[in-house]
Amino acid sequence: MTSGPFTADPSIMHAPTRPNPVWIVDDDRSIRWVFEKALAREKIPFRTFGSAKEALASLAEEAPQIIVSDIRMPGGSGLELLKKIREQHPQLPVIIMTAYSDLESAVAAFQGGAFEYLPKPFDVDHAMDLVRRALEESLRDTETPHETLAAPEILGQAPAMQEVFRAIGRLSQSHATVLITGESGTGKELVARALHRHSPRASKPFIAINTAAIPRDLLESELFGHERGAFTGAQAMRRGRFEQAEGGTLFLDEIGDMPGELQTRLLRVLSDGHFYRVGGHQPIKANVRVIAATHQDLDQRVKQGLFREDLFHRLNVIQLRLPPLRQRREDIPLLARHFLLKSAQELGVEPKRLSDPVVKFLTTLEFPGNVRQLENLCHWLTVMAPGLNVDMADLPPEIRADAQASPPENWVAFLERQIDFLLKAGEPGIMNGLTRQFEQALITRALAHTGGRRIEAAQLLGLGRNTLTRKIQELGLEQPHKKAAVKDND
Image (tube, rainbow, N blue to C red):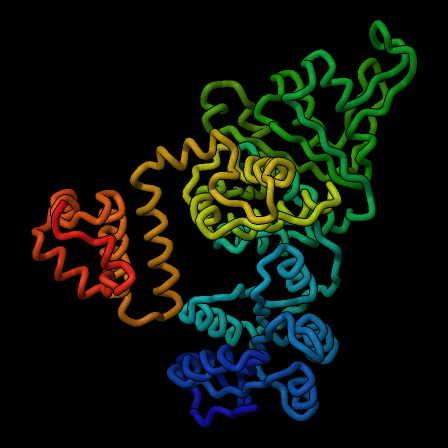
């Protein structure tokens, strides 16, 4: 446990202040050290604790202005700490950190009353911005609810997915209509189910309907139901999806494909809260939260006259955009492991493991089918790959064809991500290290291609023979056991 012997910066702290306004709680010494240095640089007094138990003991004697706590620690989690803080100091802002970037953590943190959710690894400047905001927030009178609900499987460490998790958390006590946009296969229904599960309507039904998958002449009856004798074949009264979802949530997928006449009926329900069954004359009150989704550009469809503008504005109260998988490539390894484990459990087999080259290659693919396509690929590998370790040769033929015809931007994109990773990790000498690896790869592959003939390899690489020889020596490629394979001439 450490105290920071620094004075507060008047531009950040506002009277009255407490002796140590910022507390950091994390069992990871390196994380505490990062905060100590950053807070010292900002001249913000602080205390650090290695466990929730230590922080709670000190909380009985002294209260900070904000607490930054890890979510998973031995001897007591950050969520348990958050709950006790809410009971004793309901207005104290708490920032929850976690290396487990999943929906469950994000929603549990927000529903527990967290001020903000900070996934690891984090940018120090971003973390300090949160600290400053929380210090300002600590001077305001705020109270937040504290409940913890179960969550479905939505995973993502990419910033765009973290924003989605935050939105679900913030909407957890709302009844607002939500429009989810994103390409096919990005997980729109999963997000809709999460919004329902983490809402006041969680105990009521969640009813989903794909408006594009039902014939136009049946869709009206599907949505609103029908009275007996309303049309040929209507031999009994039938409750529609709105009635089935009473008190709960109705998810309208692919809303952009809804026929115009049904758009008018849906607008009426959203406007006055009542509807009629097909062939009915008595209005039925609809106590339903509507969540809609589409892969289409509704703004464009409105301009084309294919979608009602007034309905668009009724649906577009809150919009959540799900990123395509190619915009969250860092999530591909995480999702692939999850899907391989899920498929193995469904089939009752041992989960497959992807080799490093396969993982790196998958992060370069465009995945037009997004998360759904990756899930299907993982299921295919679980069934078809011969061994537990999946190598490039085990990939489906069409994927292997992509590997053989891999466009130049693929390796550039991978290089850019590797650079970002090294920069965030604070690695020194990045330029020299990557340049050395690049030259080693070029020369090694060129020599392998020419059977070790240096003159031919130098010509292919555009180097002089002496330059190639010097680089081989500098890079340590001419090992004793390799000399026999490296030839000065043919």
